[in-house]
Image (tube, rainbow, N blue to C red; front, side, top):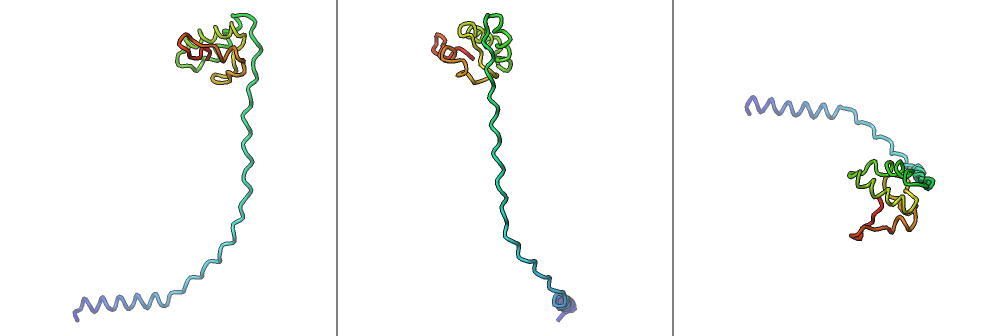
Amino acid sequence: MGFKSLFFLLAILSLQAAYAKAPVPALAPAPSPIIKAAPPPPAPAPPVLPAPPPPKAKIECLPLCEERCKLHSRKRVCLRACTTCCARCKCVPPGTYGNREKCGKCYTDMTTRGGRTKCP
């Protein structure tokens, strides 16, 4: 045997002896059964927006329609349609989108010449 192989063999034997003398780590105690917490209560429903009082004149429609159309991509088109619907139906739905059923059949059933819904 050469010097290198003898040195390698001694290194392996010393490592085995070191591992044999090392203390065996104690096993961790078994985890206790997990107790599941009660699920959190469901989130409250978003508040329903109350319908604003009906406008009496076309001039009263403008601030309501500006609020309705403030986020629309085509604001002028939205305002024109909204004020027309407001003047005819005496109602503008709350919020910036949806809630059209709050104004009734007049508002929901009004259509353009092309058959699309007119009121925003």
